[in-house]
Image 1 (cartoon, rainbow, N blue to C red):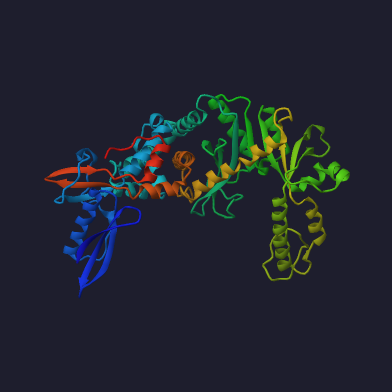
Image 2: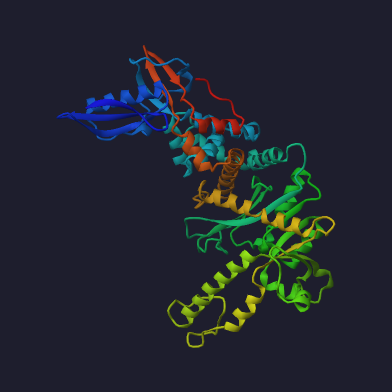
Length: 516
């Protein structure tokens, strides 16, 4: 077997193990691609090791033999000669980028804990259990990772050290810049536990994921771009409507924000909630359910029917509680042709489901347009479905802001920003693996949420500045590994050659370019 270099279409150099027999070349294995002489030297050295050992598995990720402490490595830009022996490689650039963003957001200056920093960055890199996160960081060999015992000891001081408070302050100061934030978005989600036992915090309640496991309710406050500002944890059986006021009060007390407008979804819409918001001095925009259309738009329907131009906005008044004059509030409705098409498709599926249940083709459960109590009395309410078609395409919003303060279009635009909260929740649950939670004490759960909060802030900031998903940024920077070589007994770290995409990311994040 021999080692062969091949130029690729992207300009990189592929290193392969090939075998020549009877004048024909056969590729045994593709060892990897390199962008610099140092990386080529590393791949060729490992290829020679493989030829000598006759191995059949090549694992570049496991290349940490022996472990190289940071302090012993001398950084240089020199080109490695052919006699260099490779000691290992590590994704130093990726670690430096995430560390730089962590410091840029202010977390490093307010939380004096290397263990916490490593947990946050590890959650972005490879989310998992705390122990698995630390093990992954050790395998990368990019920094001196604290022991598991030290990590758990630091986390036990989460509450007394005020890390949540400090992290939220840093996030707010970064998002607010020179001025105070006047518009915030709020939503809640549920995070479940892999256990059957309930306690004072972990309780079975209404689950966003339709699970019956014990859970906690998490309230998240973000700015208009989805950057997290505050996070709160409630018992698992807490109603959504009981979370918004405590979160807003704590946020206003911490940052001294006045004249704040909060945007929330229809789950927060209740007469008691809106009254409490008004009495506390908050402005709000919340969504309303389509079932309110016949009442809010009764005069409009009587005068002109249900024809509306695409995008037309209708001002109305809504009454959330009967026979209470003070419950009347401003409502803004809008018609969209696309929404009408979606409503029709959804109703078709709902009717099909109701028909299948009524005919016994599907298991009996609650379904829209299904009437009757027992299997023999189940029927589809086609009249109700026909009445619902009259309001297709309409979406309503309730607000305390007057028309002089916010136009109807501005109210709708503010509400549509809520998708940023939902995007942050999706990122926390998928990319950052916030659930399931394996902790069982309140203190550990709160510490876990603080780690996820800071990791979410890093991810949202990177995505906003680079206009790339966090996954794509990680995939772009991960292959750019710093080579650690032994040249005449001296350990030398050779930085990876930056690809155009990597340079773009560093420039967008306003981080320094490492020397070459």
